Structure formats: structure tokens, C-alpha cells
Image (cartoon, rainbow over all chains, first blue to last red; front, side, top):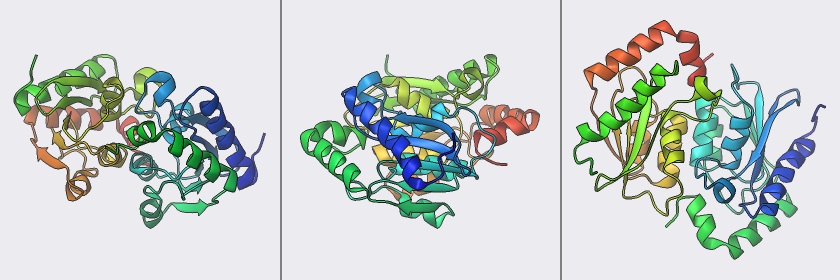
Length: 150
Length: 150
């Protein structure tokens, strides 16, 4: 299957976020595609489910994509603006493009990766914004833990 | 056990790097301590062993440390200068101090995290420098894959 449009790609990330929510976790999802639209891997935040602080949505999608020789021709799609950890991942591995579903509830390093050559597209999907806002309002301590805020 | 000195802390990271080498993996190790010297978790690069591109030494140590409420009072000790991915981890979670065993073979974001308030100590241990240089010389393709160089 080829995920041609950004909307189709974002639907994969959204489904991951919803899966995370259904598991009682933090509802952030991501997926890594080739620029031609082939899905390499998808994932969601696993802090609650696995007690895993290192598995943000983007790093989980990257993990699930397995070893790749190059990321220049890949697209990372994420429901929420990548934090500095996930932005560092994008910069180090030279991921060519990032699609952000929501940068209203959180703003990480998306401008920084853009400065370093990554093409960043911000969608600001109303459904994703509403979902994340509700999660943060209902779970402030868990949310702050996930982004290292005290 | 309390790991009081930087040398004692670095020995834990070095042992992880050596364990990785013995497994046929990339010889980079790391460990996360409280500032009082209590070991929270240690780990090593797992690209070869697990086919896991997301587990650099620092992220594996962070993963193995489990969920923590705050990282301000922690020290990340790593045998090799943290790449942008691992530097982003340090910045996002506000890890207070980083000890770098070797910044001669690779230089990632250590100056950037220092600008953002992390105390960075560079040891440049001759044994670690020699070990990593030999690995890179003998395994250029694997090394380039691990840092996203084409």
C-alpha cells in the first residue's frame, strides 16, 4: 500500500495515538515512510504501557522501522510537534521531511530541524489538537513527566 | 554502592562498551547516575545485537533507568561524545551533567547542551579513544550507519 497524501500518512500516526490512548497511555503516535509513501514503521508513546521513558512516538516509529541505510528520503509523521529528543533524532539521522499534526499543545525543536535542512509541514489538525489538549488537562503530572518538566 | 568519582562512573560506561564489543556490537557504553553517585541504569549501543537503531548507548542507559520524575540531579556518563539524538535527550529531560569519555573520534551536540545549561566534562581517556578509533577504522560502514552518515 502507498500512502500518497499527508492526510493518509497522518491517519497512520493518528491511529497509533488512538491505540496508545486505548492502552491507557499518552496519546501520541508517529510513522516513518519513504518519500514514495511506503510505510517503514509506526509506533506510539510507551511510557505508561512499558514503563519506557525512551519510547516517544517518533523514537518508537524509528525503532519499529528497523535498521535503514539512509533517512534522507524518508518522512516522519507525528501527531505532536517533536520534542528536543525526537528533533535530535531527526537531525542526527538526516530525516528529510517531518509532518506535524499539532504544534499548538507543544512546541519542541521543529524550527531547529528546519534550520538544519529538514522540510517541516505543520497541519494543526483540529481533532488532534482537541485530543491532546484534553489529555494534558486531565493528566498534567504524566504529561510533565513525559517532557521532563518538573 | 556509590560511584563517587568520574573515573568510577566512567568505568561503568566502559564496561558496557566492552560488553557491546564482546557481543559483536558497536563499542559505546553509557550510564546514568544520581549526582550522589547512585547508578540508575547503564547500557550500550544495540544496533547490531537487536537490530535496534534507536538504542544508542545513552538512550539505552536512559531506557534501563526506567521512569524518573526529574533528571536535573542526574549525571549521564558516556564513552563517546553524544550525537544530536542523544544530546536532544539530554536537553529535553534536563539531565544536569554529562561526562564524555572521548570527543576525539566523534563530536555531536556537547557544546549545544552546555549552552543550554548542562555541565559537560570531557575526559578524553586514551584507552577509550584507541578503542573507538580501532572500531571505526575496522567497521566504517557500520559506524556511518549508526550516525546516519551516507
